[in-house]
Length: 282
Ligand SMILES: Nc1ncnc2c1ncn2[C@@H]1O[C@H](COP(=O)(O)OP(=O)(O)OP(=O)(O)O)[C@@H](O)[C@H]1O
Ligand SMILES: [Mg+2]
Figure 1 (cartoon, helix red, strand yellow):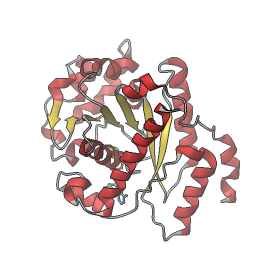
Figure 2 (spheres, protein in one colour):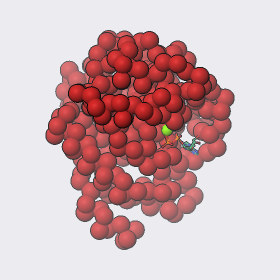
Figure 3 (cartoon, rainbow, N blue to C red):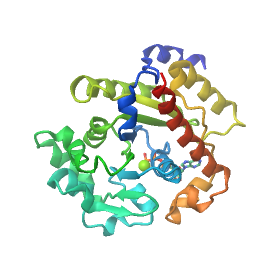
C-alpha cells in the first residue's frame, strides 16, 4: 500500500454527498457512469442499476453513448443493424424519442456511426451541450436517465458530464488506477468551472471484488482512505454471471433474478436512492 502514498496526496477529496437541496432531489436525476479505464463495469452497472431502479417503480432511460454499442447489445440489439442512433441525435439534432427502443428499460441506442460523432461535433458551436439539449424534451418522462460512456475522456464523455446531475465511477478492485481517478476528477473540475457547476462524483463503486484476495481488500481500503463516504458500501463481486447475462440480451436481474449478483445491484439501487432520501431531511 505504501507505494501509493505519493499518489494519495494528489487526490482531491470531493465533497461528501450532503448538500443537495430538496428541490433538486425531487427532479429527474441524470447519472453518468464514467471511468476512462476500459472494462471496469460501466456498461454492466448502467444496465443493471437501471433495471433495479425500474423494479422499484421508477421510470428509467439508459443512453448508450459508447460507439462500441455494448449497452445496446446487452439488451439484445445489434448496433451494426441500427440505422438511427445517438449519432443522429447529437450531430443532426434528431429528437431523442426517435431512437429510443423499449426493452427491459428504455434504451437510447448507439451504432457504429457514433465513432464519428466526436469529429463531427468538434466543428460545431455548442459542441459540449449537444446531449444536454437533446434531453430537454424528455425532462418529464423519466425519473432516472443513466448514461453509459466510452473508456475515454473525450467529447462524448464531456457531453455526458455537462448533462449530468451526478457521476458514478465504477472501479475495478483488481487493477485500481488512482492516477486515472485523479485525471477523471481534474476533467470534472474543468467541466464544473466552464460548463456545469453542479457536476460531481456522487459515488465510487468497487466492482469485480473478490473478498478472498488481500489485494482486493487493500484496494477498497485505499479507496476509502482517499474518498471516504463517496465509496459505496455495496460491493459488486466478481462472478461470471455478469458476463453470461448480456450474451442472452438481458440484465442480470432478468437472467438470474434470485441470484446474489442481481441482489448486489438491487442493494446498490437502494444505496443510491437512500443517499438522496437522507439528503432530503438534511
Ligand atoms: N462483477 C463482475 N464480475 C465479473 N465480470 C464482470 C463483472 N462486471 C462486469 N463483468 C464483465 O467484465 C467485462 C467488462 O464489463 P463492462 O463491459 O461492463 O465494462 P466497461 O467499463 O463498460 O468496459 P468498456 O470500457 O470497454 O466500455 C464484461 O465482459 C462484463 O460482462
Ligand atoms: Mg462499456
